[in-house]
Length: 239
Image (cartoon, rainbow, N blue to C red):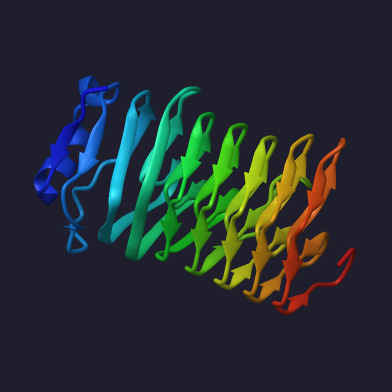
């Protein structure tokens, strides 16, 4: 595969602004400091491969209080891979379905870390991704994750690493605080038909119902194995 090297903040901003670039491969050559600039655009539909190469995107600032599907990347297609990337500092805020690295993961997120705060009013909220039908491997969240206005049905959830997963989550952990006015989990807010293995949570998790250290709610054959929780878990029902 051929990769385009990104070494400057303006290159990354230009990527978000140009849809024609969303099917190409990229690699960071160094840390990128966005310096809380307000012209960062969401890469809404990504079809390529993106390697952070062990580097960070620092001080990201996305404030879209009336927008749904808010994150660094919007939807990652099947076959796409984002790996070895850290979001270091900053904040991401949206109305519904909000994530750090991605909103919807249909591909693979590997060795990605989020340390910025991620908040939304309703929907799926997750530190690394909001919703996944793909795989998350060795991903981490250390940032504050919150759902500020409750969720509008029981399948809308908040999680430290992932809001809701139909796929596989392996070797991931959360140490950030997770707060929701409804369902919440330290690693994953909810899981259906997938698996959560060898994961752990040390962050405080709070919600009102279906609250768990690893997963808020597991449905339809979802399996949890080799996981542990050391974080405080609080709620009013199904804890």
